[in-house]
Length: 294
Picture (cartoon, rainbow, N blue to C red):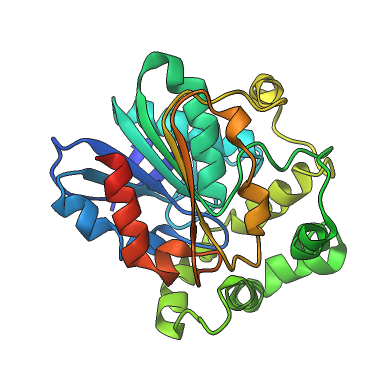
């Protein structure tokens, strides 16, 4: 485990592959950890990529430097963390691959860095670009899927996050996979250790409350938040991979996004896959990543 220091964080990360290879950063989502990429990393490393897998703020061994820093989980904070992580490692011509929260961070960092040429490829798993603004209109099917967002705004939801995080997140994993698929207990136990981070609950609660206007964000990201609304166009070649049986973000949430992309853009649905393509079908996910990164 290595650590990169940014202005606010010591970001823990793991690496694989040749240090001189073209860098690719793999970003996990919620409720997950860096171990979500374990089945994907070896093939990317074998293909010559320098694979870098960090823990997001509030997860694993990543730590805030100052006890007084707001434990914000707002999407702009996640994106800014990634920008500073790239700068801390002095990375150039880096590909960004993100799932769930990690996809949001990757998209934000891409729009901020694309003019510099530092980002070469973008891959988003299980999300559609330009979503999660408080004013967005949602079909009722997706409102149903997002029940957990608003439950966390209630005292009962907050208590569940703080005091029963393993029970809550195990339920989420069981609910979001494709019908008939279940993450085995050993793999869940491994990833759930990332939730023992002392800031996990605060970051989680703020993230889901802030995106619906139910909690304040960190004022240091006010300007970045403003640049993200409306969502800026992406000029970097972008691939979206979405499970056809995703029961968290319905596949329709990533459809019809072509207008946001001025560069090459492709979207692929993975049959029989739910919210976790890198877990549920690592072979298909890896093939798609290698083709896109090539």
